[in-house]
Image (cartoon, rainbow, N blue to C red; front, side, top):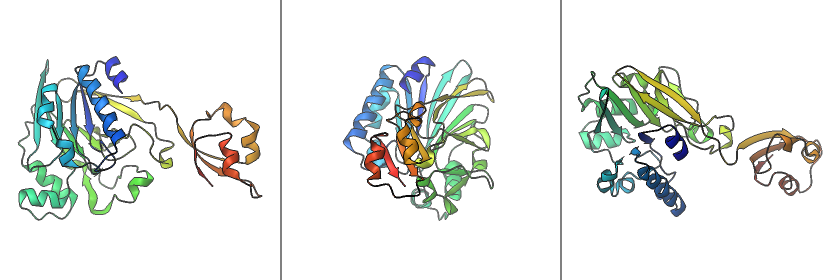
Length: 292
């Protein structure tokens, strides 16, 4: 991602929540985030970050006011208002609004309301801002966004917890020129081209085997004119699901198209039981993670 940012002469990077996968992330994850953000700052690339449902808003907020001096803007906690950063270029003002992950209980507590659905909560959260529709406006949000009856494509880890009253309709965001969404692992648009999930940078479950991970580059020009380009992210090791027999695996033909260090989910189709199958499969694919 850093290389792409440098090659494409990127001025700012949006991280739309789920910086970590746990509220108390492991040390290795914190170290990696620290290294990544530090390198971006060294390249003079601004960073705009919100918390997601997996993050601890308070922990992510720590030191955020100090970090602003290096153009690292973090909005971990929703405080009843929407934070706004204004930047200017040759086309005028570009307003960036931050909406970290919210749910009805959070909004009700901050605004003294009694919303019941996520859709109502986000509507109320957006009511407090006076959007200048003559300027260009970006919203960074972390919600489960749908478009009418159209639902984003989910992975296994998401289908268990999303849906029902969790959804927010994309029509809520009509006044924004671009909506940068986090929450869903597959890169995809929701309704308008300018309402997009960037997706996760890596495949995190075998239900994501066929996802084409990417970063989304948005080139803002004058009002109502932005160009969107997806740049593929190629992982060090891919993730694949393969149905085959032990005989075919041993033949070596499969290795001509799938590297031996690929993360594998293998379904053996043999009629007879294969004794010590996992050891035999690992001789061919050392990173087999699931065997059926």
